[in-house]
Length: 338
Image: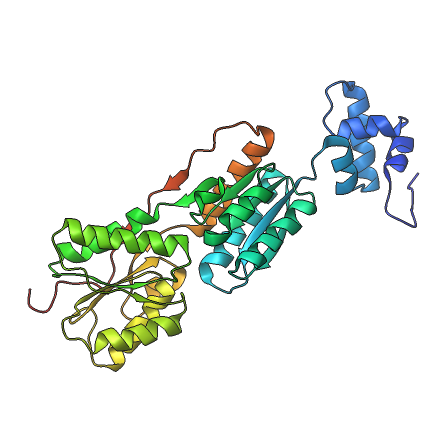
């Protein structure tokens, strides 16, 4: 006989349908080993028949876990952030977790408050997809007793690090331009309060020094195409500039626009390399040479690392850094004099 409920079915309803106690239903749903197979099948059949969905709060009271992952992201529409968030969502779904996200601006108080909210919401673990920098110490205290994975290089908080090796990204781009014959490489860096931007900046500078090349003064953008455009207007008026490493593809689009408006041909007069390899990079004019890093893959890997830490809080948190790859397209070539 079909049962109808004026409310959603409760655990008591499942117990009645299966002819067992509510405690037995709880044990089945918690994968308790001391349940007879026949009883387990009856309970699961009743769950399916009634369309029962277990309340996370009830699960947390029984198992000590909410099956929820907290994620801290920045309040931005930047491509890399949205792609990483998608990877987290997909990874969490595969692992049987739901995601509770909070956004923050880049300030110590805002970042600390955002992480505090996640901790007090009872999530099983946290993925920090935002640069911590000055907030690392305070955030580290908040997350000292909860599994935490960081994707933005702010390992100072004592968290497990999952991401792309940003040192290698800048080295690949800079060496590519030097190997083409450019005397030096100019750099439009990201914001100074981002760990990834700082890593790329230092690697660019070190690569030039180790190659015996002059290190030009760096310029800084905010990841937006507009900031790339403004910096491109500066670099485009300098005839000695023949090669530019831009810290993100989106800024690189702005640089290319500015150079074109100033009559500097790409790549005949100036070569440009971006970092990220977002979908639009292959369709810019000219197609953008860039450093490929998969944000979606980083999000998935961060979830899998976090789930492993939740299962084994004592596991060693070694960095999980993947090497990026160089994708050569039409925006780079030997310098005009070569």
